[in-house]
Length: 154
Image (tube, rainbow, N blue to C red; front, side):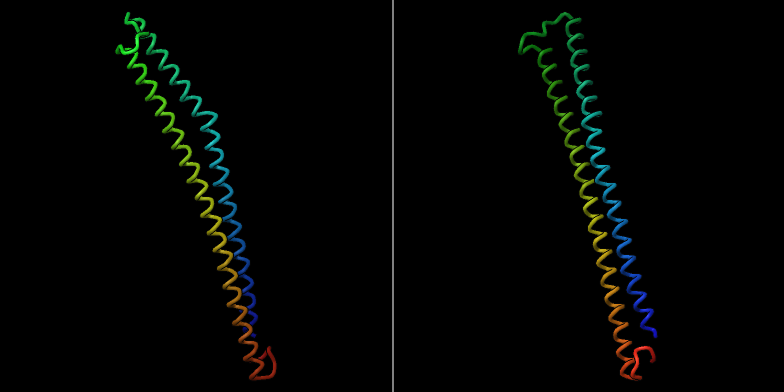
């Protein structure tokens, strides 16, 4: 009756595969939620903070130029170009921060997809093992029947 062990082993392999798939799916769900949380945090906290800092920096620079007595309103003069250069640099900094946030978001989603795939692989591995054990059990039952006329004896 060793085929019973194969039947139980096959069933166990199937259940382990399903359990592992569930674990990977839950981890993938957490990764996706984490990605959304990070994205939302950037949009509601980091980006407004960066923009506010840029406005403060621009205001401080303008005040410093005005205190120095230079005319900042004439295009082509040095203070105007410095302020323009700072504005361009700040816009570039913001774009880099947005790009990094997007890349991090995509990486988290990609990791979630990989985890779901790993879970599907575990479920498939469990099914393959189950089928192999069931085939072994069937072979043993057939062999028992051929030798003794009963599937229970060997």
